[in-house]
Amino acid sequence: MNTQVQPVPKSVVAAICLALLAILFGFTLGGAFGAVEDSIVKYLDDSGTAVLQTVYKGDVAAKDAVVKKSWVYLQRAHLHGGAIGTAALGAILTLVIMCRLGLVAKLSALAFGGGALTYSLFWLFAGLTAPGLGSTGVAKEALSFMAIPGAGLCILGLAGTIYSVVKDCFLASTEA
Image (tube, rainbow, N blue to C red; front, side, top):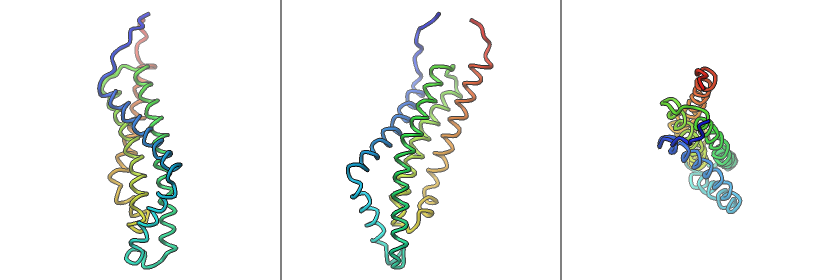
């Protein structure tokens, strides 16, 4: 039995780092929420108050609703960073352990790691910008250049991982 460890390609190491950064991002946001939640919510409220007359036309209830939803978006950033980052890391390690690291596997690893970080950052930026824009919908639309590729990369990365595992573990010849 050959137990020699193969070197991991730099592209896969980069993918692992991206996934770990997504996890760190999620954990850091969680820590920030625990340490300075009131300051974060105040920042969101102040951002909405600064444009209360121009954007919200003096409607405090509308501003408060956007601020409340913005706080939920920041929580989504925290949760997505930890969850998708962990899923990406698991998928990448599955590729390293179980598959030949060909082009599809390498690209899948990079896609999943990069997508995990990008999509998590999208939710952070959407939450931070929405009060000043007057709408969470407007913020999401303005940042769709991050959301769509980030989510797409995650889906492509997972699909490529599944493809690689099936190809290398089920369809490969069983020569020993």
